[in-house]
Amino acid sequence: MSEHTQNPKAEAAVYLKTLIALLILTGITVGASYIHFGSGAANVVVALTIATIKAILVALFFMHLLHDKPVNGLIAAAGFIFLGLFLMFTLLDFDSRNDYQPRNLPTVAAPPAAPAATSPAPAPTPEKH
Amino acid sequence: MSTSPVDLQHDPHGHGDDAHGHPEDPHHQHHFTTMEQQFDTSKIGMWLFLATEVLLFGGLFVGFGMMQARFPEQFKEAHEHLQRPLGALNTVVLLFSSWSMVMGVLAARTNQRKKLVIFMIITIVCACIFLGVKYFEYSHKFEEGLLPGHFYTHHGDKIPLVRDANGNTPNGYATFFSFYFMMTGLHGIHILVGIGLLAWIAIRGNRGEFNSSYYTPVDLVGLYWHLVDLIWIYLFPLYYLIS
Image 1 (cartoon, each protein chain N blue to C red):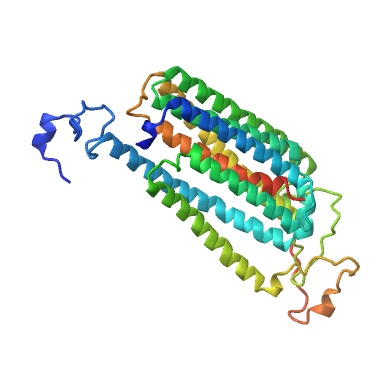
Image 2 (image 1 turned 180 degrees about the vertical axis):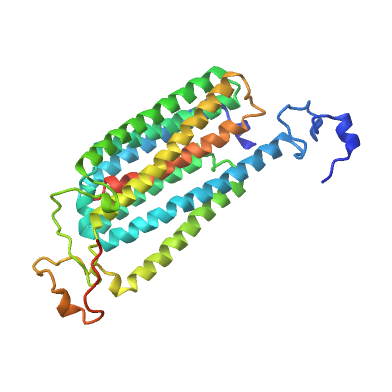
């Protein structure tokens, strides 16, 4: 256990610095949320980038991955890589489906569409409840 | 892998001195060569569990992202119902609790029994503050009818609901709160479980059961607690900071 080689006082100092960095990043991300970065997506990217930096700090220092056996880091990375694959393929699918767009939402001026005019298919839709 | 009955008679606990000839540790299980190997094995198991936790919450995050893309305007408006200062307060509380947790692990590893118990109590107090703030937030939403699915009864939403071609009225607001309660609720359950685990560590630590050669439970509960913190690190910006 390589952790044993470290001096406890030095280790405690590292943890304190990590905490301070995390708190500063929290302040930055709250502050950034009040700034408009051009588009809603840009704000999400900024927020998620800061969150990822925080997550990496927690994983490396609080969860000891920096000095731990590589296999633990590998398992952690595998979890996130598979999550990334999941997210990527889901988003690819979402992008390729035009009919999945929120057609039910009225655009600014559009009147509520007459159901009979747009849907020639199965005539009177069964009322639920 | 079999242990002969003769060995068991010689050694009723099923283990002897480890490979380095150290005096045996009562926590040393016979199927591990050394305490270090035993510790590393437990840790790998914990990390595998944490990976499944990442995927469990990951599914909810992906679903949330999909619905955010499907109901962008309604989600944006629904985000406004969450109070940013409360979310930020809870983030600070959880980060601080993560720090006290890691200090507790350090105390256990350096044979500081009293410090371990104190840090565990600080961590539990932080967890309770977190749940207290959550209770306040939840009860506020219950009062306003900001509830999941068909329980949603909030009035005054800006975007009127319109029936789609199938006769359904997809409601982005209700969908938002379905995800909100599911994700923060599941996270809250993890906090509750964590409080139980932390109390268990505090009690065992108080009995002096942990020392520099055996602190596996402290370390593993620490990993769990940091993961709960890590999930909140993503929940906070995605729910409270988007508008």
